[in-house]
Image (cartoon, rainbow, N blue to C red; front, side, top):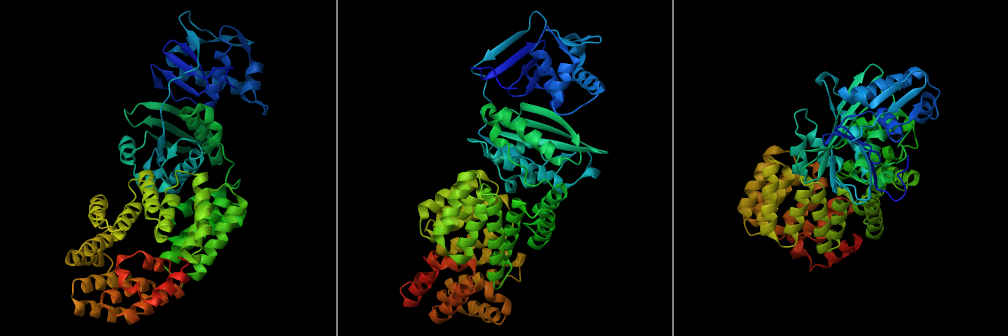
Length: 570
């Protein structure tokens, strides 16, 4: 039903109720009332013809336009609507025996058509993982998947910043407080919901709460066939979009990522584990793609799993990056409007190919499609940083931390960039705050140690690295950095002891850039260039730090340095 010409909102006030047709909102004494979509449509159909008879046949055609249903379905919905209205239900809805129904508006009721309906002023939103009503019914992949899908849909709304799934997945505990989460994330509103399965049916109860005062903006209860999870997601996304931006809700309507429910559920399970176990995630995505080879989001997620392995797991990452490229390219080909596909393809170009121009093009496209992507902003910051566009890097790093203020990854990135551009005092303060929020987060410890070392406090740096090494004693990356800090602290023998041990280990190759850093601090340029050549030959994505790390400054006058930078395309 379209709004009246020249009108932004159609309101009907009756008793303690106000019906906002265009925002699909029913309130009682100013508080949202949970109402099913069919009951809402029935109320609108009766209320818009207040005082006149509406036949059963008219109502059945209105509520079920494409389906032949029995009259008992209408009787059931009338009964449900009366229950929703409570004791006032019989007063407002009169039965005309054998004919139909009539909405009876008391004399005091008014119908208002307002061009300036009150605005909820929601400019930022977090969708929390849905919760089961009973602990025994937990399905964390489904709970997180509901949030993930709604985030994807609602991110299409212009002017509304939606927190990414990485920011909200930490709020999956049954005890988490929604308003506390909203305030921690710095958003205007938060959407939370519960899921209950009853036989073949699924009931989803959803609330949209304002962070400032905890008042509900909108609430609804949706009952659907448990086998049609997509229908539930469609309804919730549409209702939330209408409540936030009535004129823009069409933007939240996206085509379904797949029509195969089993493929979708496998995808959700993969998304739930991929960050912590890329191999397990990739296996779920592979099985999903067997069922639906045109599932673009599953191809993008597959690219993410291979990218994680190429960065952090493989001594020779070329094969993993090639598989990431293949999967990301497939995702973009199947769905050119999928921002994740472009962001992942950009990361392959930047991390492995060192094709900076194509990477920048893909990052820009990803941000056009989703300006609220913390991943696109954060990874684009790295690209700009390695190209020595420090102002641009700091700006996109700032945006990533604004979108996901609780992300330790983006917080550490900001500290790393501040340290590398000579702003050690700011970097140290920032990284200390990160550790306050995320104690024992190893990247924060190592970068805090590096910042102290670059600030002329190498012994403080060694203490930070010692704490990090205690948490991951077999990490060649950390041990190599520890050697660098010993060298900076003029403890040459301690540095050499670590390096000699590391160079005997075949698994030390992924730490080649940090080994080069340590040998640079010890004044051995030949050993330093040897390990830099290893890093570049193996196309280790961290080889790029040679262009920006203050620790490599002693090498920059050597002709071999210029040759390496040319190979990196910088």
